[in-house]
Length: 280
Ligand code: C2E
Ligand code: CA
Ligand code: CA
Ligand code: CA
Image 1 (spheres, rainbow, N blue to C red):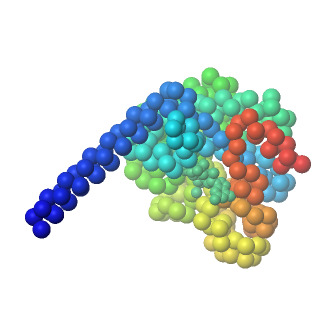
Image 2 (cartoon, rainbow, N blue to C red):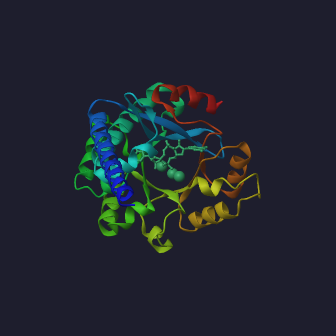
């Protein structure tokens, strides 16, 4: 028993050290990815449900990690947030998305007014340099502020509600739009949501999943659309995977949709073709 106890301790220590080392290797690799141009943005079209036409796209980051293939954000964004690398990563994403979107009007007339949505993490938003970085990105790329939408989550605002709120008002003052992402999955109170200077509410995929057609499985998303209407916000449904879901959401009064039924996220170079197909 003594021996076994000893072995277990050794195995445990070894596993812990291995995990810590892997963790550090991952962080060093991610830090390098930001400077070595291993990150790439894909864009997922956002569709106006009444016309069926694309009106914007959401920027979603991917990491071409040497020896590991293409990594989805769920594999490295949490690590970036915990380590603080999200500030540099987020600054790169914001700048690249503004640059790409500034080029869309030249790619296709249909995308002349298209907005670009960018995910912003809490640590990025509350960083002292965030507003300056935002203004630099807009100035250097020439993107009209009205074409930029920042997506923030409820949970992201909880840690420093006062500081976050101040920044959000300053963002709006620049002419940039705000969307509340993953609505319904957080814990903040409705009165707090109502105080946010956001004009767009993104209905989380978990509310869209149960919808099988008009009137079928729509109870929760109907509540969210009604709530958004009541507080004067526009709605975007995410994770729309079927034409039946798109129809049901349109009938509920949801304004926009995003999901595999129209397009998966695609590289910027392919966005023009996808937008032209969707425009018909
Ligand atoms: P999100 O903001 O909720 O983004 C939507 C996610 O749902 C994307 O996954 C997208 O590819 C996926 N999706 C879209 N339509 C469908 C559909 O019809 N069916 C299904 N099953 N999935 C769909 P992705 O690209 O893996 O991104 C995951 C999350 O990573 C994002 O969730 C966002 O929270 C985060 N993220 C992505 N890019 C960035 C970034 O640049 N900065 C920050 N801070 N977070 C990011
Ligand atoms: Ca998002
Ligand atoms: Ca979302
Ligand atoms: Ca989501």
